[in-house]
Image 1 (tube, rainbow, N blue to C red):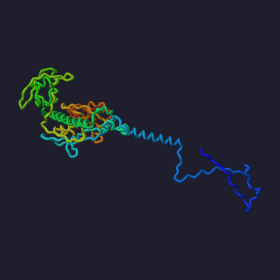
Image 2: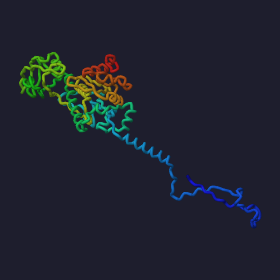
Image 3: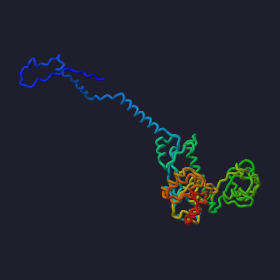
Image 4: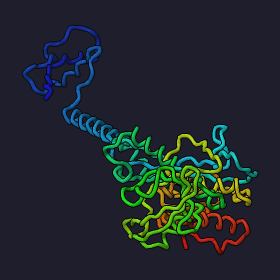
Length: 395
C-alpha cells in the first residue's frame, strides 16, 4: 500500500498594507485549529517509466495468451478425416487442354452435339494428418462438402505414391471396360484372349492367348454374351469351348469350375483386343468412377444416334465389360458439381440412389441407371419427350 505523508504548509498573510506581521496574528503551531493538512502531490513519473500492471491484470493476460496459443495449436493439428468437395467436370465428347478426351481410329465416327460430362470429387487430407481442425470446421459448416473418416477411404499403411499408382491403374481398367461395354452395345465384336489360367481343368485345356469363340457351338461376341452363356450352365459341367489357337480354330473340352456363389466359370482371366483403336486424353483424374460416361461417349461418337442431342448431361458410375454400372463415392458433391457446370440431366448408379434422393440440386434431373443399356434408353426417352418412362432416384 502506498504511504501518504503530510506536512504543515505556510499560511498566507492577511490582506492589508504591507508591514511586519503582528506577533498576536502569528499562527500558533500548537493550536490544532491553525494547522492545515494536505497529502503530498503524487510524484511525477520519470521519463520512460510505464505504469505497473496489477497481478490480476497479469493473470488475465496470461490466460488469454494461453487460450489463443492452445486454439492455434488445435486448429493446426491434423485430423483423421477426408474433406470431399465438388470437383471439376469434364466433357467426354470434348477436349481438355487441346486433346480430345475420346480419340477413335479405325472406325468412322460422327459429329456430336451437347456434352457428356464425367464428374469428380475434390479430396483434401489424402495423406493421414493433412487435414487441419480449421479445415474440418470449415468443411463441416459448408453444406456442399462432406467429411469422411480417413480409414473408410484409404488404408492407413499406404503411401501417397502407392495410392496414386492404384488410382491410375483403376482409370486404365475403367477405360478398357468402358470400351468393351460400348463396343458390345454397338454389336462390334471384341476379342477375348486367355491371359491367366487356374490350375486344374483350365490349365490343361487352354494356352495363353487362346481366343474364345463359342461355347457348346453358340458364338460369344463379348463378355456379357459369355456371362449369359455360362449362366445357363451348372458348375462342374463338361462343355465344348471353341477357340482360335495359332490361327487355327479348334474345340477343347473343359469341366467348369465354380465361383463363391456356385456359378459356372471357365477358370481363366481374360484380356481384350479391340478392332477399333480408342485412346483417352484424360489428365489428373484417377479412379474407376468415370467408366459409365466413357462408355456413353464412345457410343455417342460411334453409334447412329446423337445421345446428348445438344443437352448438357453429366453422370458417374463404374462400368464393367458386361455394361453394368456400379456404385461410387461422393454422389452429392458430384451432383453439385454437375449443376454448377450447367448439367440438366444426371445419370446416377442405382446403388447410389438412396444417398442421392432428396439431395438433388434444384433444376437437375437425376436418372437411375443400372446398365449402359439403361442409360442409352433413358437419354433416348428424354430426347423424345417421354419423361414418364425414365426412372428417377426419387421414385
